[in-house]
Image 1 (cartoon, helix red, strand yellow):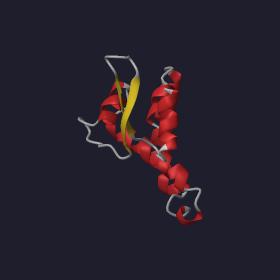
Image 2: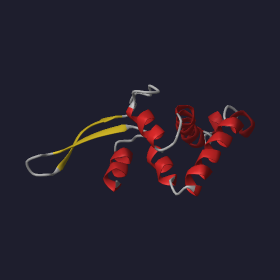
Image 3: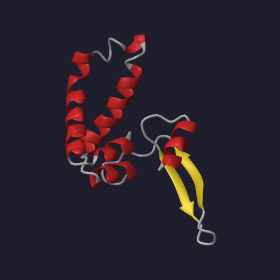
Image 4: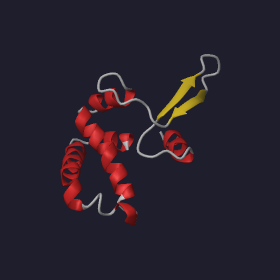
Length: 116
């Protein structure tokens, strides 16, 4: 897990990406193949949507979680302060915070952390 997080940050990614690894059948080593910084978000066919659904996170909430992390990052920039004012993002924040509490209370907050 730590290798994935380090790779994500080392490659300059934000919010989500797809890292492809393969384990060799000959030596058992895990090899990094590629990184996709903007993998698909198809509701039923993309890896992220499938993984989110398996974690109990519906598609709309997953998209809002990704959006929420971007808003948190960009709202610190004075250029975007008015665009991402608390009143304008209230619904997104409420939805994501509610889902985070639900995941935390069920001992599954790691699923949120994996996505973000």
